[in-house]
Amino acid sequence: MTGEILDIYDENDRWIGTAAREAVHAHGYWHRTFHCWLARPGENGEAIVLFQQRSADKDTNPSCFDITVAGHLAAGESPKDAVRELEEEIGLKVGFEQLAYLITFKEDHEGVHHGKRIIDREISGVFGYFAQWELAQFRLQEVEVAGIYEASARDLIALMEGSVDELRARGAVSRDGRLSPSETTVTKAAFVPRDSGYYIDVFKRLRELA
Image (cartoon, rainbow, N blue to C red; front, side):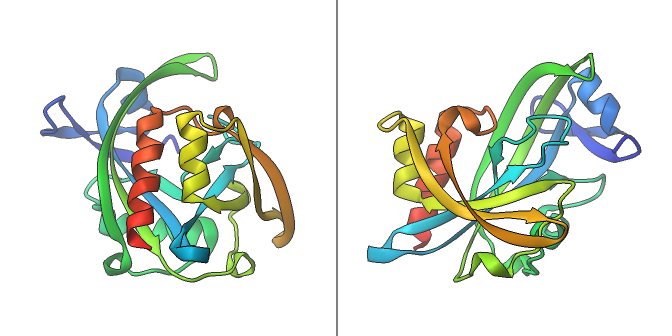
């Protein structure tokens, strides 16, 4: 949102003020985001990871596979405040104390958005939520999330490492507020472009929560 105000930081992670989100991306200010990955127990103690498919109408990386839930921290907010994103995007109400801290990830990316050059520099607090759930219990915010899919952490690590070229994932897509079962083929290139090490590290840490 254009009117969103974010805290901004220097390259040493020191707070230097606030700016509108549009200005943050135009000038390349470092800012904070919240990542939360969901996982559940599978067979033989393996973690099954839930990931979203972004809406086809998203301004950036439309229809790509992505973090279960993520969002920017508005000025003055902490990750504890951002846990609301879980309820907003997938309809899951969770307390911050139920999340496990995984890593902090710094990402520096440049690109073009609506014909304008953007510099996206994010400091992301990455968390995991490990619990038993069923796909049918989720309610998706369709303007943000087109569908949700799941695959084992083992298979996702193999995909990101390049040991396999693709995998099959089961999940659900949302149409007019209702979830319908879905299956799809997932490739590494179909995920939001990030350092592969980020995905591999997160999936390994989610396995440790199992």
